[in-house]
Image (cartoon, rainbow over all chains, first blue to last red; front, side):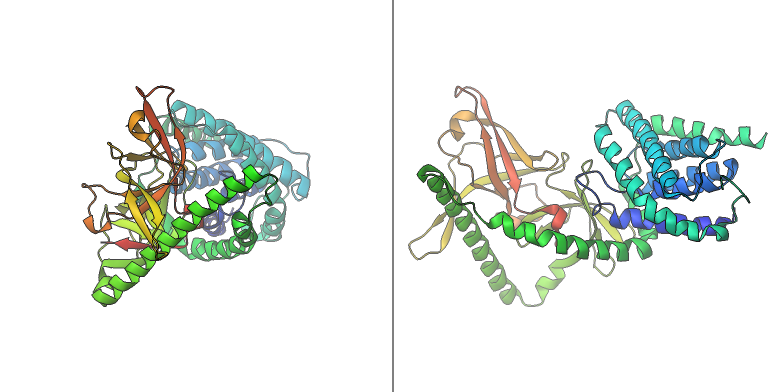
Length: 162
Length: 282
């Protein structure tokens, strides 16, 4: 994987998360752009670079958010392990794949974040996190379509799930 | 082998998540500032779209339904009278501010500085992030206001931005005073301080404020929904802001007997999510 492209992707997605998160969605639920970036990396990259990249994305997301540090790092790492570590038969370019994998990733994030919040005696807000997963999955379809157009520049592994 | 070594990353993350608290305000602001070249234009676009979507809702908020009965019409009339009195009082405040501004000349510009908002409140923390680049000497505990009332106080100052603790945050505690706006014969409005023994301690409750532990006997029959709460806190760092509006009484929970305490729900005068710019008072 070409890491400079990953840095640019992470910068843009974290910037969008800071700038747009309060406008897209309802109440405390909204689109999680960082989750979409993590899904893109997990779908396309090999397991080790995907794990490092998703961990980094999560750590940065923790630093811009209000939750305990490590929550998103743990959640995105698990997404990377689950998605990048599996042998896939689905097409990585199909919008339905993007929707399902982002939704699944969002549910993993919701469960882990709720557990961590429960541990720290913070309101878990599991319902709004599930709604965030759904919004993110919807947004992932156009965003990942656009990112897939630039997929070659990332120099992921040669042929996965095509 | 390499894969197994990398598995320590989620383990480290899990240990950190269970043992570390959230990022401190200053750290979070500094990290957020790093992403400003993307976040700032994205937020501008979001604000523009949000404003165009929100506009019809704001218009509808002030429209009233056609009353179906005489009682409903009376209630609606009473509510409109309260709204009118509050709006007239706000207008009076603005006129006074304008007059004071003219008297003070340009010096007021040094005391009150406009600041743009770069981050809004969430359900978890009622804080605003404001851009402080170009502002002079922003300090912690500086008051943040708008023309409609008190917003909060600067909690921490970072690189290029500062965090403002809103009056609705559970950590916010301010002493206030109950007042009622009454129309004079010359159509101007005066604020009458209500005769309530205890000054309310206004504490944030997440989306609004609550004043508790006020003896029910001193509230019953004296305080009404629609009365205003203004700042009257000797410990507030800027005494000149005494009388700035905090919010309006939206609900009064009274016990059955006079022996207990009343809980007063206070709706802030400002919709903090819709704020675009605030004034920082040194």
